[in-house]
Length: 239
Image (cartoon, rainbow, N blue to C red; front, top):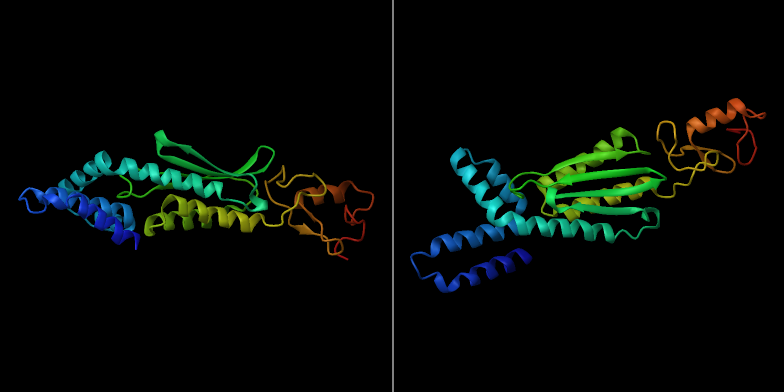
């Protein structure tokens, strides 16, 4: 597999020096680099178990100074690629923004004018030894409990898996796609996200199947001459 090939390449790179008594540091560095790139979750688990503070500090400092930079660059590139591969028609507004200086990627879905759903992931300087900071920046249109489940899912993926930042963005994108699949604008306010409360159109007419925001529907019923009629087909609501 890729892991075996990468390790073999790393060993070949130091092969001519293996017979030398000074070969040990080069071999150790090659093995460590290969492990960080191919088995990041295992490296993170190992590092979390290091109890000697001096050793942990030395390993982390070496990793941040020597190994993490190129790995983080690759992670950000993978996140950008995952955003570009979002071809779902329901996700035409899905993008990934990068801030290389902050080692950060933000996956964003523009839901409506000025409304968006965003997940931010910031990698530590010693990635992948330390875990990523993951947070939901904006969550309009989706219940807080649901976005929290998505957040925990992405965080767990980054913590325990080897799929990296690109895989986490793809996971977030899949959850968002499922949530917004087939969602149409409210027939009253002509927006996807409600101005009041930020919800999606969930209230459906049993006759025409058109959906409305609950807050919009309540206002319509209070102001309409036909208080219990569907705003679209005009049949009795719930009939």
